[in-house]
Image (cartoon, rainbow, N blue to C red; front, side, top):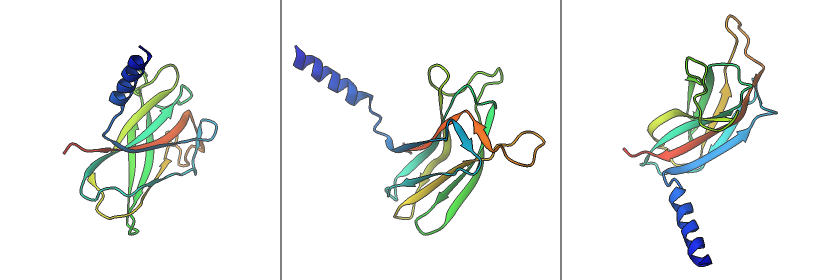
Length: 161
């Protein structure tokens, strides 16, 4: 009976794994505050140069996050020194203030589209750098300590295209 339960548990565990995920990593912010000059840098191990991928930016926030959106700067550096830099805006809440991410309690996880069906054509290691570009309305300078963002990460999945 114990072997049967162990076998069933193992099958359930294997079935729950998502085989489309190629790489994923998170970094924790400083005390739940994402500092203005803190660049979250990730190394993307060498991937197939023919396979298309979907790249996501993952954010975890708690109830201390005061805004309905977030502005990010994402830079993807190629192994040959070239880079693509984007300024991105994502909604974090519905119009009624309800959080968009998944999760229980005050912690929500947001899976945000970054690159869809991208082929990384140069063989080698890529680098992804993420920083926030939030500022208060009417202000020129950015928010120094963006409260409520607890973790920043990325996820790469195989594209079905």
